[in-house]
Image 1 (tube, rainbow, N blue to C red):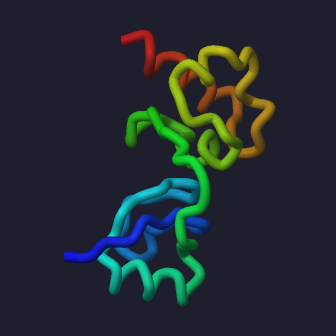
Image 2 (image 1 turned 60 degrees about the horizontal axis):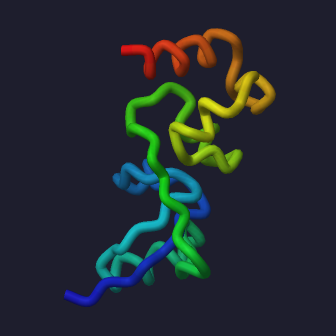
Length: 100
């Protein structure tokens, strides 16, 4: 089966796909071409960004949207509430997530 590497430019959840904006994946070519036409994904360009965040972490989509893609990056940011969409409660949940 032929595949095509694409980057999501919109959330894929509305299309039954568990990918968020910024995720880069390989999809079957036919599906990738359909999603490109719908402007959900774009053909992959450049170096791949490794997203090392668990799928169930609170605020994952907001973090990725703001370029925070690894646990180390989260730990290097003193105030996650600087990102629109992450409040004090979500920041606390994120910090607690990694304590266990």
